[in-house]
Amino acid sequence: MAHPVAARVRALPDYPFAVIDEQVRRLRDAGASPIDFGVGDPTIPTPRLVRERGRSAIDERATSGYPSYVGAPEFREAVAAWTLRRFGVALDPKTEITSTVGSKEGIFHFPLALVDPGDVVLCPSPGYPPYARGTSFAGGAPWFFPLRRENRFLPDLDAIPEEVASRARILWLNYPNSPTGATAPAAFLERAVAWGRRRGIVVVNDEAYSELFYAPEPPRSILEFGKEGVVAFQSMSKRSAMTGWRVGWVAGDAALVAAFRKVKTNVDSGTPTFVQDAAIAALSDETHVRETIEGYRAKRDLLARTFVELGMEDCTPEAAIYLWQRLPGGAGAVEFAKRLLDPRIAIVATPGPWIADACADGKNPGEGYVRFALVPSLEETREACRRLREHRRELTR
Image (cartoon, one colour):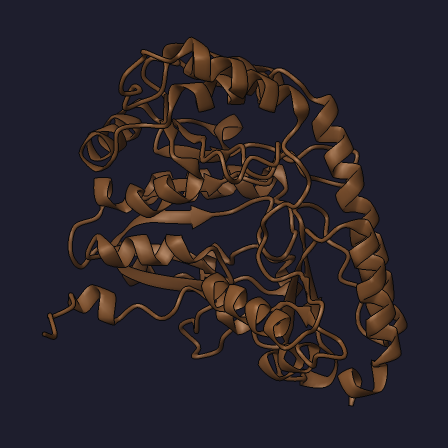
């Protein structure tokens, strides 16, 4: 018997990274040895001190029951202490921090706290799909603004029509940025907070990549420029290679955190406390973060240099774990990614249009770009560069 499926689900396109996983499977089934730059899932081990604390915490929490909906007090206190050390921002762990089941869950559900049917949410393009899809599930309307190289991949806030801004409830930002690797200067973050505050728009920065940067000066948090009407999402996934642990947090305006908590208590039962204990251990250590950065830097430099050798533009990113490679001569991103899937090359990457949406001008700013997630090992990255050079003619024709 066929059963009806909700219109909101029927309207969903395939999740791009699930499609990429299928491409990897097909290459393996064909006997190839794919090198997967498609999905941004770190392949380095979770740091030993985190794993050891997780193991001991499982026994300590053997009879702990359900975790706190909003995060254990000690976890929220650790987040507050880390935020003060890292950004100089004082947070009240009781009212201004809430744990999340990884940042994806929190980002997807956040619009449920603020958006009524018909409200507009301003989303970057390219951008993380849950910004827009969480908006749609909440009954809101995503309005996409482009991130373009000529503007350093920063949004042009002045180009957002006032009739759109007047209906907007949330402005999503993501700096350091996925997929472009751009960082936001302090002047822009300060201006964005002021822009949103004048219009009654909540400004949210997804800061999941704040700790993975290559310049001497670390990226700034949007919370440094005010907490009223402002929140930041954070995650342990990339900083500490904890994608499988599913732990992060949202912090900022106490009233907004309270609204989000109300959603959370109706959606899930919180992050397991022993996972939070492991995250506390991770937040207490910066050595593994510095080592992680250097590992990504080596792969970034190797891959970016290879594309320059192939006659492409130098797209070396400032931060994050992606190479947002611009293709020469208006080459089609999907076609280029398909060429990479030739079993002789067997490199998996994400076409830019798959993680971008058409904006008000009808153009998709992801066209002409391919994203490479720097998650294969250094040895695999070297092999990928060898394959790219060997098959240069097929790729650049």
